[in-house]
Image (cartoon, rainbow, N blue to C red; front, side, top):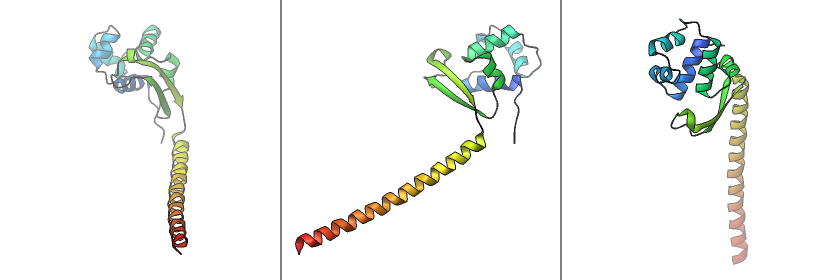
Length: 139
C-alpha cells in the first residue's frame, strides 16, 4: 500500500519528528501559531521563500521536503535526544523500497539463526572432544 503525503503532511511529519509543538514551529518561522496551523492543514498557500525557511528549520534541503514519503530512511548525525536543531549536524533522507528491506532483513535473520545453530553444534562437539581427551589422559 502506498501513501502519498502531501506537502502539509510532510511538514507536520517533520515537526512531530523533532517533537516540536505548532507553537514552537511557528516561533521558529516567526509566524503566528494560527498561520502556521493553516500551513499544516493545507489551508494556506505557502510562498517559495517560506518553504525554503521551513526546510532550513528542519535542517534539510528543500528538495528533500518534497521527496518525503513512507519509503524514506533518515540518517541523522548528531544528538537527537534533545531534538534541538543546533545539536543535529546533518540529516540525510534516502528513498528506499520498504519491501526490499523487509525481505533482506528476513534473510539476515535466517542467516543469524543458522549461525547460532552452527555455534551450538560446534560447542557440543568441543565438549565431546574435551571429554574424549580427558578419558585418554586418564587411561
